[in-house]
Length: 199
Image (cartoon, rainbow, N blue to C red; front, side):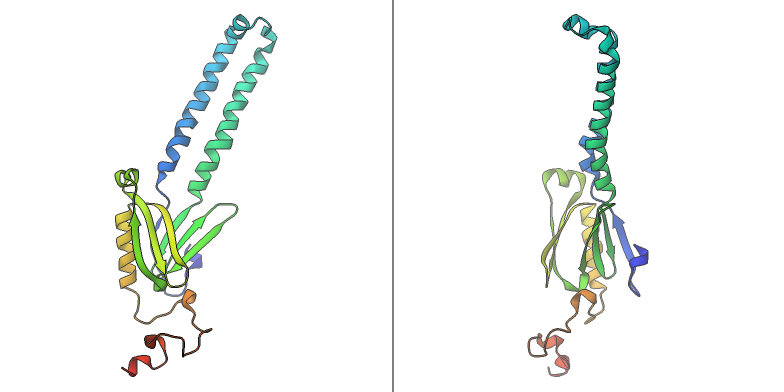
């Protein structure tokens, strides 16, 4: 992130989403190998032959291999993608903007200039309140609402955002607030050239 900073921009805080989304994958990560080991031991003891006489002892190796492959498929197909998705998501608050990055191989960046933010709203579910996380909604001039989901320590993050907004220099316009395409007639009075002197 530091390589992408603009001149004079400073990182205030970097975080990832609340790790509660990893609870179910973590449980599955523990249970899948345990279930595979239990099934493999059951097969090796010859229990399938007692249940179905058609299944001979020659099938043991294939059935054990199937158990191992099933556990590996669950780990690689369910647990690993969710871990990588969480690991690849990062929220960065700087002195000028909020950057939300999603993905490791295919990356998506969402940036909101603090100078464009008009309102900051926090919403929490019951579980999020227990875990002190929440969703922060940023209402901006140009893009409407931008929601950053499952931010940990949401109250502190909101305070950091509000402090960064208070520290913005008066009248400074950043990259996402380029007004070069507007004529003087359509700009608000305070943004027109010499507008502050006319009052």
